[in-house]
Every structure is written in structure tokens, then in C-alpha cells.
Image 1 (tube, rainbow, N blue to C red):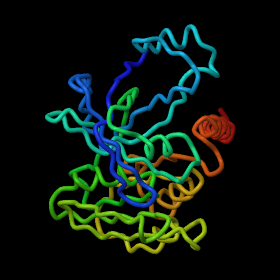
Image 2: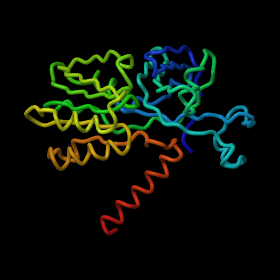
Image 3: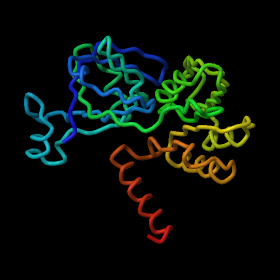
Image 4: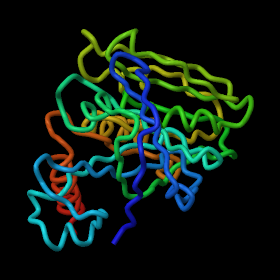
Length: 269
């Protein structure tokens, strides 16, 4: 069974109208793995109102004794920063009012609140041997993009294309690299903005290492464009859908299973 890390909210900050930062701490961070990945993610456990959970919390007992509908809901979030020296873990949450589960929790979080999570996982970090880097995503990918930018080697070209709701949702992004940053505003722009921006980009010479994450349908089109029209090798791509329009995380898991089955059928397996 994956290990549960139990933390306490230390402070929160409203970064933009649609993003809330939660900084959590606790002695259990002493054994939190330093993976080296910039897309390091955790699975946060949200207890359901009115359900009594064992104290101390034990996920094995919860899964053995409680029906699935009473078990904590799970939401996946990127770790924006981990500071072992200060024993602090920072997670940035997209917040769209009362919609969803994690965003409203983050907006209402207070110092002393409990935060339980599984992980971390991860698979990507900028390759220091690449000639240049491409980072593409929407606001859900900003924490991973921001963490990646901090690891780009000094002076190395990096193009970042980031889609947010509007100008007020832009935030500072720093890097030792040579950054070309393009913000796209979703308000009135419709879908396909990220693909259009990448398609219009004049690729620099040399080998690119690309990170493309965001809404699943848009990411799928970006992946096809980079593989077939730009000729980027698969090994130089980190591409994944973080969410699917019209579905919560449980529905998104179903969507991913359906997509995997369709790919198997298409491949004749």
C-alpha cells in the first residue's frame, strides 16, 4: 500500500484570481523522497463529510472497512516546490469558484488544516543536453512549467507557451535560461489556441526537449503535431493530459482507460 504523508497547512496565498498556493509542513516530510523530477506530483486524499475515518488515519483500514463510496476522493496535483531544509511542501491549486473539489478546499484552507497525500510520482525533468526546450500547457500545468523553468541551464533557449483565462492570471516565471514566454488568454479565444501557437512557432536549430501538458483533447492534437509535422522523436517528448473538459478526476480515469483500449484496438493488439 502506498505510504500516506500527513501534513499541516502552514499558510496560503492567492497568486492570481484563479490560483491559490498552499504551503504545508510536518515532520513526515523528513522522509518525503527527493525525486529530481520537475513534474513531481502527489495524490491528495480528501475526506468525505460525515464519514468517520480511523484515528490515526490508516488507508489500509479505510479501504478494507469502508465501501468505495465512503473512501476519500483522490485528486492529483503537481508539487510546485519542496524545501527539505524548511520542511515545506508547496502546491498551487487552480480555483474556479465553487466548482470541483480541490480548488474550493484550497481557497478555504486555514493554517492548521490537515493535508494527506500519496506519492510523489513523476517522469520529467529538462534534459541539460538539449539544445533548446519547449514548455506548453494551460494553468493546470503552470506549477510543472515553473519548476522546469528553474532547472533550464543558464543561457539555454526555452520557449514557454501558457494558456490562462485572462491577463490577470499571468504570473511571474523565472529561469536561468533564455526565455521566450507567450501568454494566451482563453477569454474569447476558444479551443485550439495552444496548437495554433505551437504550429506558428519558428523552431530553433538543434534538438528540442518538450513538455506538453494540459487538457487531454488539446494535448492529443499537440502530440500529433510535434510527432508527425515537426518530427520530434518520442523520447524527446513528455506529453500528457492533466484533465478532460467536462469530467472530474474519476471521469478522467475512465476516459484514459477508454483511450488506452481504443489505441490497442487501432494497433491490432
